Length: 94
Image (tube, rainbow, N blue to C red; front, side):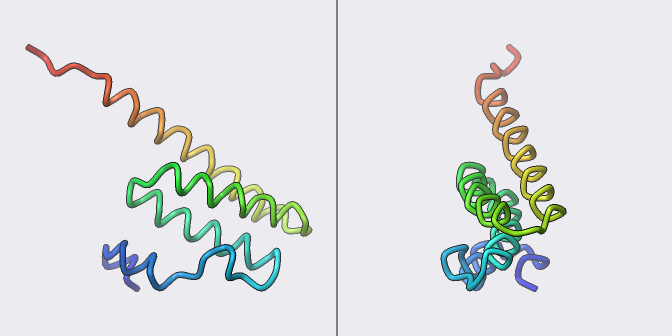
């Protein structure tokens, strides 16, 4: 609800962390969802770290679709990170 309303800090505060998850499957789901909020907040490195944990947990399960989603979201992190890096090197027109 908070995420959809745009309140990303509150959303992250209320979301469980990967460490709080009770199973590998739940770690993966929590990690994917949390990383999407982190990415929306512009916290690309944090999102990627969360996805590394989620992917590791999902590799211990048979949830290949979720593992693929985690890896796809990591690709989005890398793309976003490169885009942000390129933008910071961009000189304004004179």
